[in-house]
Image 1 (cartoon, each protein chain N blue to C red):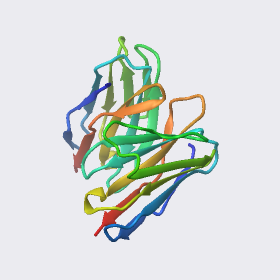
Image 2 (image 1 turned 120 degrees about the horizontal axis):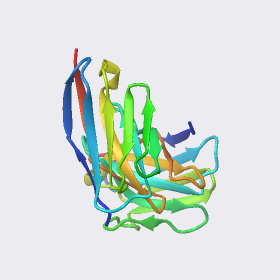
Image 3 (image 1 turned 45 degrees about the horizontal axis):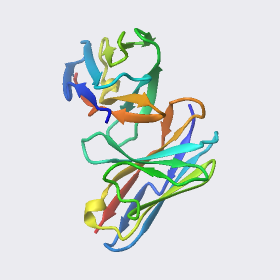
Image 4 (image 1 turned 90 degrees about the vertical axis):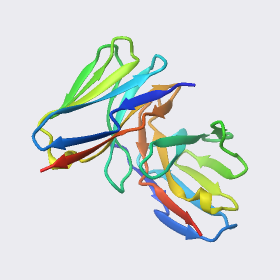
Amino acid sequence: GQQVMQIPQYQHVQEGEDFTTYCNSSTTLSNIQWYKQRPGGHPVFLIQLVKSGEVKKQKRLTFQFGEAKKNSSLHITATQTTDVGTYFCAGGNDYKLSFGAGTTVTVRA
Amino acid sequence: GAVVSQHPSRVICKSGTSVKIECRSLDFQATTMFWYRQFPKQSLMLMATSNEGSKATYEQGVEKDKFLINHASLTLSTLTVTSAHPEDSSFYICSARIPSTDTQYFGPGTRLTVL
């Protein structure tokens, strides 16, 4: 079955620095979605990418979908304490989502 | 974004009892809802796909007689954990799919503790 790998598992970032989390699928995806889960909370939808090579931005967050539609990345610039949480990518096919393991982000003030 | 509610948010029960969890889409009709399970510091594991008016589709390794799913209306799906045991303790999260899209909106989750 479809597998989605996500790295790194943990990201400790100095406030103000940038970081990137990467997602790779074993199969071609129809779309990729990104979610953020705060500690003790539930996943919150951030964005969906559908087109090959698509790039979308949300303020300090930049999402990219690879040309082959098998990988994706989330880049956060100028990290803030509000960015703390776990970021999950989820590969979409046939209306089902396969979640990556998540990248848990902590921020040093 | 779309709103999905889940009830109860937290439940503690004795081993051997059954627990019902409700998932509702509040401002849209969801023909498809999903049930996930999440262990501490782990990812979401899809348990089953709930389709309105038909039987749920369970993922490999998930016991359908243990986790009963009913999707009786376009806004409500229920998950019943039957004869719960301590190993069933987990965070159960439902999601509802926006029709004609792949986007899922998640409920706030239910933390089940079986004593």
